[in-house]
Length: 212
Image (cartoon, rainbow, N blue to C red; front, side, top):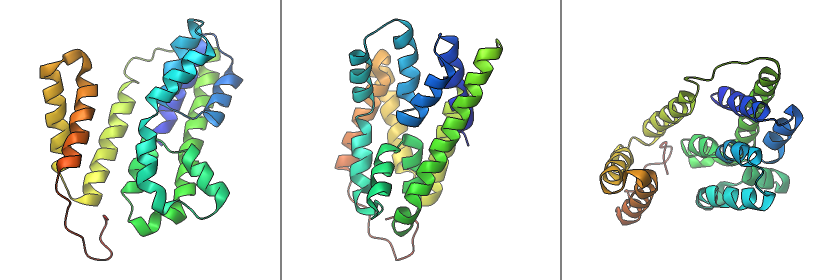
């Protein structure tokens, strides 16, 4: 449900930037790219060509390729559900799915994906209506995203009982801030990927455990 306020902020900003409410809603139904939708608001307002927006969206969402590869073996068997889950994969959906035992992902993947998109679309509609009718300050609402990811990180730790990835991420970001503060996030992601690749595999767990 953290998607409701996030979607509302997007719908509000889209309408405030001069876009139509129905276009905001259509983008959440047909694009559904979260951060990329926020990114496209100033790009559209600046009159940039669609090709530039498409390229920027492609680069920003490349991470979903890696998400998808790790879920290939647990995608639903039904073709339409499989394609929908690929389309609707987001950071938050991936986090929720990977916190589930592997055997429970396939039967729940389409439902979880649809629920998450439904919350996002609902939030977009509410924000678009609000943006068209009132001038409301958004101070503080940007913290919703940080709070949402904090909750997801806690749920991941509770499901996997492995604090090492959290410490790796914290150390990588600290290193990024020291090496190049303006590119700290990119450096942190690269260092985290490298540490994950070099980290020894964890021992197999007993059947019924919460993690793979």
